[in-house]
Length: 153
Image (cartoon, rainbow, N blue to C red; front, side, top):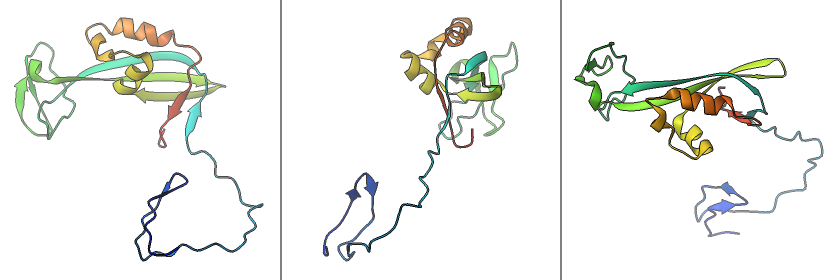
């Protein structure tokens, strides 16, 4: 084939131009080629040992959006990243959930983010920001759940 542009072929994306030539490959012996292993790390049905949801304020500057350590009792927060000061009530609220899992004597510490957990539970988990005990109980009662770890665990 010549003078054509191939964009997608069997689920693969190719960058071609009209000058690219596609020709039939020579016969190859692929019987000894190792199958590529799935790079996804799965922890299948681990026991959830404990769960720790963390709710924290995030600075409201769209160029910053860094986690803020608040001073107890203070309504003012200072962002150490962009050196700006705002009221605590003006900050965004974020959450992450730390799971400690055990599977066949292997221990895993996994951080899950609200979008993923919310999609799994089919609800907005940020609604639990003022009462994380209900969310913690719901997560501890999960059974037969597989965890897919990122490539860096």
